[in-house]
Length: 250
Image 1 (cartoon, rainbow, N blue to C red):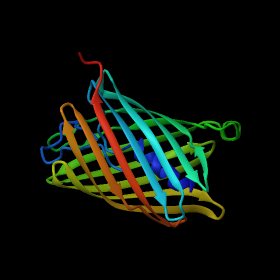
Image 2 (spheres, rainbow, N blue to C red):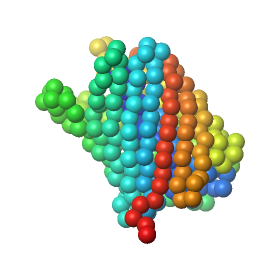
Image 3 (cartoon, helix red, strand yellow):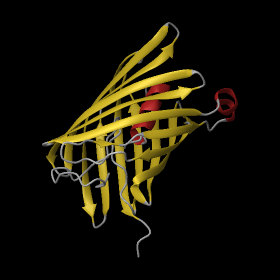
């Protein structure tokens, strides 16, 4: 459950998981709205985004998160936070609160990919976790490039908690059936310490996303079916909702 919960958190900071930030090709009217893979696009100045992710496993466990992303003066710098939560057997719980900073190292251009490294601090919300584990850190390097009607994204990163490192890799191909309707193929691989050594968990998620532009606002919804194999085995249904809108404008 915790690994699936971490995937949901990563997805939405992840994070993330609505907008027209980096002037993509006209084929793509939606960018930076993946579920398991982080796309390398920061928010444009004057635009912020709200992201809700919710998944239900075949065992009846619900995991979700809320993420909000804000540009800092320009799209070069972005701050965000993620609040994860879950429900199982009638009981609710809160996950580690994540505060994220992302730097737009490179914007996409002719022969050039978008690159936007991220640094996150993960703060436990429960007293037990706070005293036992302290804070954790996460780093991620997202890279994104459009090739015709396909957007390719790749992530390499790791979570660090005390002296334990949990590296991960993610990749996706997003096909523009139309500018506002995309078919998605995502995968997320994590290597976590286990009783007998490293345990590998692999998640593959086919899905789709669609959106609507309402003036300067954009609404995006999506659906995916994550299948997890390896150290953990599960199937789930994942729903996505994003609302992007301007702020600070007269």
